Amino acid sequence: MHGANYRTGNGQPYTRKEFIKGKPQIKIAKFSGGKRDADYDYCIQLLSNEKAQVRHMAIESARLAANKAIEQVAGETGYFSNLRIYPHILLRENKMIATAGADRLQEGMRGAFGKAISLAARVNRGQILMEAFVKKEHLEAAKKAMHGAAVKLPVTPTIKIIALKAPLVKS
Image 1 (cartoon, rainbow, N blue to C red):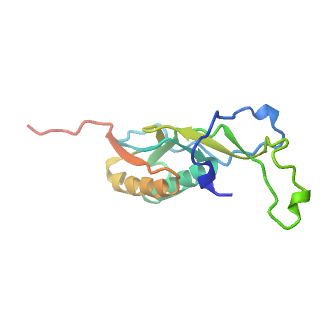
Image 2 (cartoon, rainbow, N blue to C red):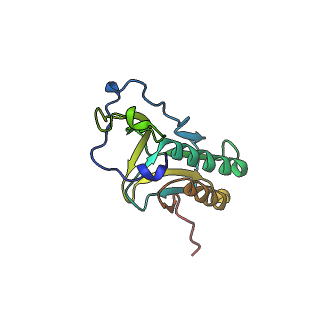
Image 3 (cartoon, rainbow, N blue to C red):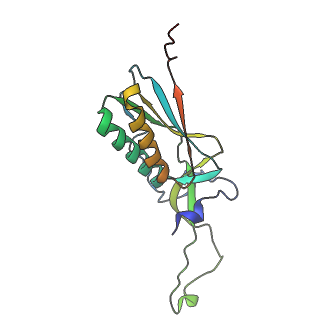
């Protein structure tokens, strides 16, 4: 099973978990990390450049990569990161057998509802996927961390830097 098969969202999003037995467990451990209440200088955002579906394994992988890279430089209390998407769409697959003699075992499209295999979040163009708040001295490390997180995602995101404090201007 390849992630490319589920990158585009075809049809209606399916979110009715109560009708499916054996639903997949969400892989995302935490949606926020670091110290929430601190005096940060910059906000670094990861924005999607295209409309796509991002599976929960890719979201968790990107979160871990970014948090680990920032934490090595800023420490556990020197940053705050936040995931802004939630994977609530169920992805289903009607598995087919591809071995010799499989034609006698398969039912084809009869009852082809499919088993739930994964969860995904649908993202739009320009939507914020993840953000990190850091102090001025950790800005370059946070940029590198967000680039490392961007590699893990099926979309090509943009890194946006927002100054939370106006720089002091000498007159």
